[in-house]
Length: 211
Length: 239
Image (cartoon, rainbow over all chains, first blue to last red; front, side, top):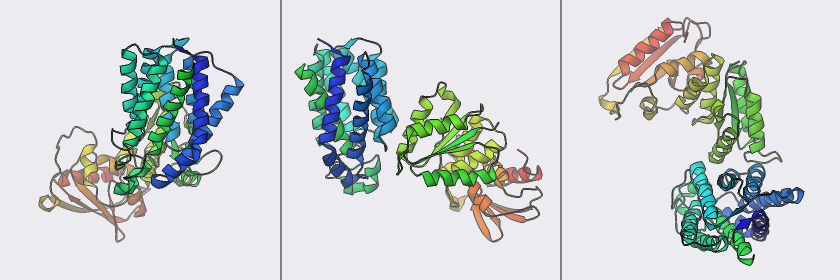
């Protein structure tokens, strides 16, 4: 079983619903250690993605991911636009023109996306950023795929690891991004970017699991 | 046409302000602002940055300068999205000082790489910044910074003979001749001092043709720093 454009679109739509439902929570998290616009930015970005999908549904998983990337880059302000945009862009390019992605291809796309975020944002593990959710997620996805895991299992492994990774940002002192301006005062708060990653991966896993 | 510049800022007003500033000292350089979100408000806009990048390109390449972290990411993404990403470079430089140095260099007809170097050598403000001197390329591998207290010192006065005095282009060349030297150089004119590597600081001295300026250098390369500056002045600040 592998996932086609139809499932990727469903996953993205579910991601948009989750971003909308958690908008205020993300705003609150970002208000504590950032500039307070993360929830609004992510919600606006994914709404724009859904609006694009209403116009035309791309034929391949790669094309869907590319549409998500370009739309997020254009519509999300702040650091999240270039970061999430780069993640989806690199993932799209690794997915290529394939009609469908199996667990291994999915993990490879996720890896490319995460590498893109690292290159763009230049954050290290434990800097209290989205990387702290993404790196464990991609490792879990690769392990799952390596054991022959289907896309659903691969995504759910990634989502679980991302959730743990996101929670691990709470005690950390931020060393990258706006929160780093706060120094020690950034400790004790969940990183909003890591939270978004965990929410999105859980949403994607949710859809794949239901297929 | 000279190399073009794009000013990527979270603020529309800030980007336009830098463009206004550069318009005075580098009138032939195409400088495009990309500030704020298209719907208004603070942020960096990918579409606006890409459009500014296209507008600034006249065939000689484009240097992008940015204000804060996420502006760098937007600028990089815009460059990577070009048909040929090698035609534009995001400079790691302080926004205003870097833009001034880059504009002066571009106005002088320098190529893309030299304009980027000019921006990246630019130092902020008029304070000493010893680490800038040896990080720039030019074959030095002196590695360590020497202590200022035991370093050689050198002093010299000279009279400006060139038409423009210490305006943008001469100030940019002054910064450039000091590249690779382990010396802190201060320029004094009319009772004010500036770090010789700060294009904006040196311009701010307002030294004109006929003015006497003082040069003071500290560090292992103090002597050669003053020699280079004197030679530059003797050439009437012709690159």
